[in-house]
Image 1 (cartoon, rainbow, N blue to C red):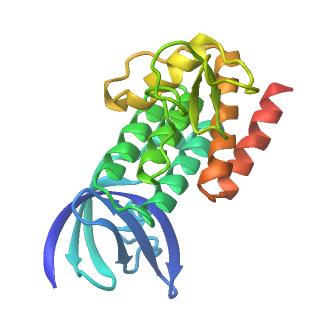
Image 2: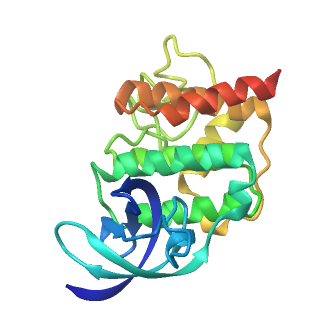
Length: 247
């Protein structure tokens, strides 16, 4: 085995033997890899604090192309402490991590690492996690091969007079093609496209009305149900959290 330095984020952890853990790390260099952190559950272990979910850093490992690599040390870039101190933030961050992890099983494109990293950093910086979740959901549809039609009408390709956003139709519908889809506000139509194309790293402001967000979220949930087959327990928890906060 050779020693390598890889940039990565721990997306899950599993106890192994009496004192170790197996870490799943989404990396910039090797996509998703399994890493064993030997003895990290011991109180005096130098690996204890860096062998947990959401640690982002430079991982020094004995790298194996197949099987488990072995962790040597981690230079932490961000431990996302602000996320961990807030139930809402950790809930949205956990869902995003789980969703990216699931998508990586179908598409191991390099862009997934940047998408996860950038979204977690923005949540850590205090940006609205609800909006960031929807941005990630929109972008991941492309990785799943089911990107909605948001550059023109789903039926005729017309880029003008878009009046509806409908999951069953596959995206936008223009006035000429619309038969029975519910009319969508112009603001929602424009924002969906903007959120899909925005570079998360460049975001400096996120202010969208709750009514618009609710409508976009309704579309995304319907679209995921229609085309992805993905079901995550962490999303169910988010829905419960949203209900509690709305009371």
